[in-house]
Image 1 (cartoon, rainbow, N blue to C red):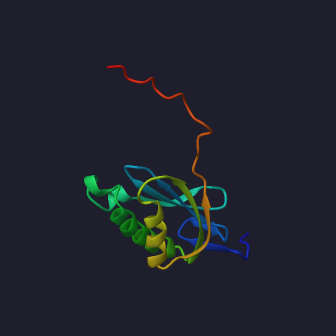
Image 2: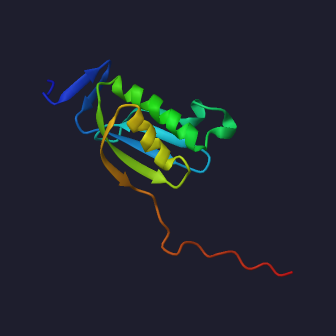
Length: 127
């Protein structure tokens, strides 16, 4: 039995609560379209869109975000909530690329881990 608040596209059943998870590292930017149970429906990375040496750039994140917005819109989704993780250069550019691609952003959540004083620093070098 199918509820009124669901959309069907191919074999995937997508509910109204959906989001995009963006993980930005210093070497790449990853996008994942997830449903309410955090099951990945579609994914894309900046390494698939540009050359290897430029995948960590601001430009690569914008281009990948625009392409990923088209992929998400093919499922009939126009507004999403975004979960950010990481501190890479493509972090803000990824959101800008999704907006330029035509998606409406409802909410942005930052889930980046921050150390509470972290690990012990290496000892000073003596010369």
